[in-house]
Length: 397
Image (cartoon, rainbow, N blue to C red):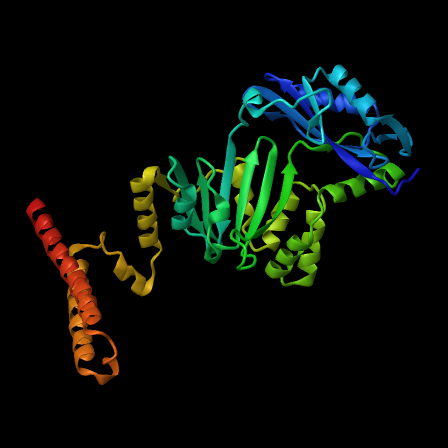
């Protein structure tokens, strides 16, 4: 059979308490009814366990008819949604069954009743990504961000998730990976339009335990429709297409990326996808047990003072060339004295030019005096600090 009204439903089975066997219970119940679709692994919450499934329907009706697969892989009409879901609720022992987000028998359970989700592991990676940006994205909450460098840029694993969308355009594109339970999500955050505050993104999700409810015979009508369902669930839209064109210049690579985004895939596919966008695919391994590099370091945040101090320390670490003259607190005494003397000498030369050259007659005298005061104060401070630090070091020895 065929239908132009082909659609699908999201079914979410919720069991109160710890139910590690819940995924198998749901899988068996769906398979016994020969349904067409996919089922994920169990997701643990503080007070409950959830199992999600996507089931194909013959039509888009409110109380739609579901597809059923016969032994030869042909599609048949099954039960209507309302009748079947009540049967599934009874046979699995689920406390709640949500159909497209709504409980079949009454009000939805609230988040306080179900509890928080299990811990999320997050990794951010990008060639332009900076530690100072990650510190600011973490806000003033207590956090520890483990960072390390490799040839493809900075990698970071925060103890608590950071607000990644707030990272500035100059640090994009970057890769954000997170793992919650069995699901790993790879999100490429692009610059997007300058008129958008948080840029734009494209994502791929891999559930490590996701499987088809039933595996129909290859080439059968059921197998074809199952592939169509997979593409419907994991397609890409116009905005994502723009990101792909922006970040992947090669047409063949673009086509491959689009194909990967239209399938649930596995970790191998996810690694290939992130590599097509120019990121290190080994970053995914750190969410699945790969040991972190020995040269990693930890940035601590928490409260305004500690967070801003960490951000300034990262900015000093990231400074290059002449920018380093703005961050000299940790220089050795000899370098501090040398830089202070150089700043004073350059200040004297600049003062002479400003005072004598007619080209700068437009520059107001009060503003010139304020500029030179700041210039001389900077040089004198670091010259004096270098002398004091040198004397302290000599006294200690």
